[in-house]
Length: 133
Image 1: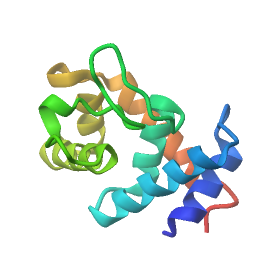
Image 2: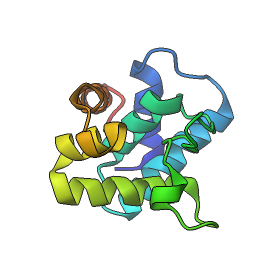
Image 3: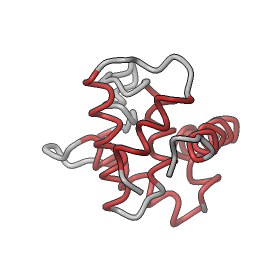
């Protein structure tokens, strides 16, 4: 799936999407990195939308970037935060499966299923979009 088409679909169907070129570029980067590392790009895009609406933020607990990865657990000091987050997500999905992997990404070791259900719902909405080839 082409990253640009995926993001056009996301922008066409997800509510409250920031209509700025920077956030679209972040969406495309997330989709591209996810595809490169074998992660379902629609899930990674949905996760970035759910976490930050594709903004570069730092949370009060130190989570960084559009996917809100916690660098002290997953990243090397100079690693790109999108790539680091996608690799963390891939690792969790390989260990727990998609739904439980997302739950652990969003809720730590205990997991948080409502987070996973929300991200998976958003991914389905994007895939069902008429803009999605």
